[in-house]
Length: 402
Image (tube, rainbow, N blue to C red; front, side, top):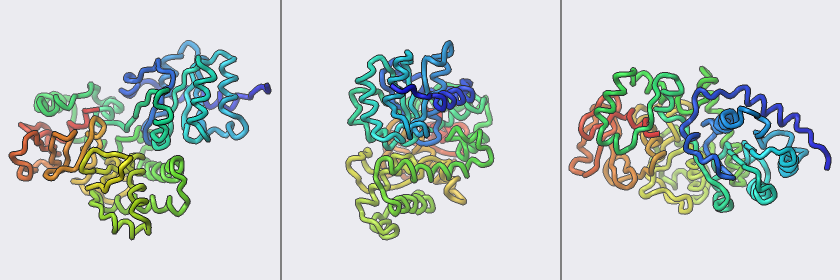
């Protein structure tokens, strides 16, 4: 067997290690069962999946970093070398822990990881992909072999910790609806909530905002383009013309959010069929660029017309629209944070129904119960409110759920 030259792989690995700090570690890190043999970490681009891998290596293998290896599968090294050969070489060297990034960039990656699992039973694999589309698509093939996790963008609570402002544990949904007054009073006594909440809505969702600084929104727009140009084709073999339609759909919706879809009209605007238009919408939802709000819990097997469409998070609103409407920013934030702990649907009355039971209206501090009065388990999520009362809950507090 020809000796493999791992110099480019190891140089990239050591470079990543030197750039990684463990001052701030996402909560998901502590929720992962790191003893599982195959671990998949899903998430949209820019949420910090690579950092999570490197932090695991730094914290677990600090005595000898050569016991593990990180490799991004979009490395040019794989143009002339195979992943199986790499793993075989590492197995002979006694390396037992592999961390694969960008797995969707490697052809037939699902079958390759299966083969590695069978051929090298002592090897542990932790993998991520910048496209959660392809990883999600592989669940059926890998379901018995792997444990899957999802990494979302920073919650408002995590943003405050990331900034070094305030460190608090998650707050349960039950505590928020029953104990929100005392909780809000305690938090508000420690920091200027409104100052930091506004900052978070504009630039706090993706951790790379710190390194991007003033270029953050530009970088975020570039990230959106990469998702559509590179990640969508990893699942659907779309032609160039169809990818342009995906971009057009996103920009049409961004200009009109909250978008109440007329599918026939949208089909005409992008010159596409109903099925293809719905497929594009659901792909953008899985890519976390959009949030589709349907009447019942969302199913990616049955592509029903959504009742309302929002952008994936409030930062995307500031990146893709010139002057975001504050009411829509509020709704986008609320739906994003709530969907990370349960499912959000469109009710007959009110704005959002959470987990099929809890009804919410979202608005400013003058918002009233007029539309949802006399409905049990109904609440207001109100902005510009430091401390609520009764069933009026400060909007910012829902950012402490994750």
